[in-house]
Length: 379
Ligand code: SF4
Image (cartoon, rainbow, N blue to C red; front, side, top):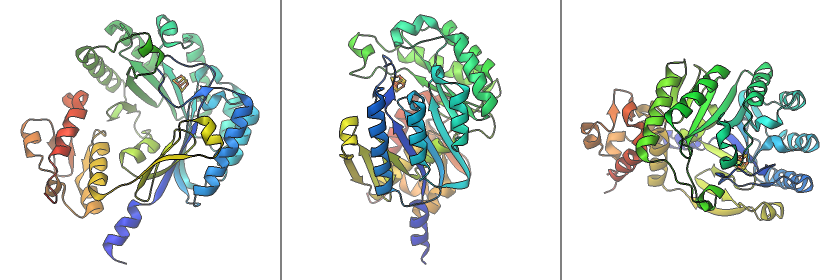
């Protein structure tokens, strides 16, 4: 077989599946995800619809990663969790795999953790966001620091691969508030931490109530404080917003950042199969009624390269030049004229990699846009 065909087959290998569970017991004021209030009967129907989608689309490939996110997958009743896992059994996994399940810390019990363990889950992701109870009302989220600590520690008794999420740049948040959150999160000693600056999206409760994001200067100071503090406490900064103990980076998220192909199952999920990106409907009712895909786009070569570059630059190591060459049969310098960006110290390169320097990570979006603008192939 020709090398180009082999490259195409390798590129289109399906390695991952994301499964969206759009149910929550309470709606957070900043939430822009696809979610509805938990309803037991609706959840049952939803899981049946999920089974139909998997039966229609999944081609039995052994997967490297599965990620069950939401919403709050842990909001499902035990009966519905059992139904869900019966459906997910249809997805084959390779011998070595990562299977993540998102949990709301309030839902964590021995019973839940045992059930997850019995059903191939080997990684948990827990949305703590902040320990600061002054945000309870603003975020419309229960903030019970003692319960957070107790339940994360309980998770660690069952799973050694645990992620917690931290949100910063909250309304009127001060550096001291952030320091306190970081100190608490470090004490938890989990293997993975994901951080997000609060974005106030339209149609969220925060937006309607006229809350404003912190300015760029404040956000940038907070971002670099997080990086400095987590790195000095043994975490590897491996992606713009993600930190892990050595060996615990998220394989599922790396699959996205490496632009690998993946299934997206469920309402609001997106997937990338062969060269087609698709989005499922965000309407849970439409999804239940079988009206699934609302958007499909065949990705041409230029878009594919741009996506690869954009996603790879989120990683601290940036673009692996050899992988780029192997994928696209071209050197990166023959596709982008990025010398000016290197001269301006917005990009750095060595023999193997092209990457964003650590002091410019906060402005990575602007740098990526400039790099994409320097596309020279077929010009
Ligand atoms: S728990 Fe997550 S998905 Fe549910 S409302 Fe809050 S942020 Fe949104």
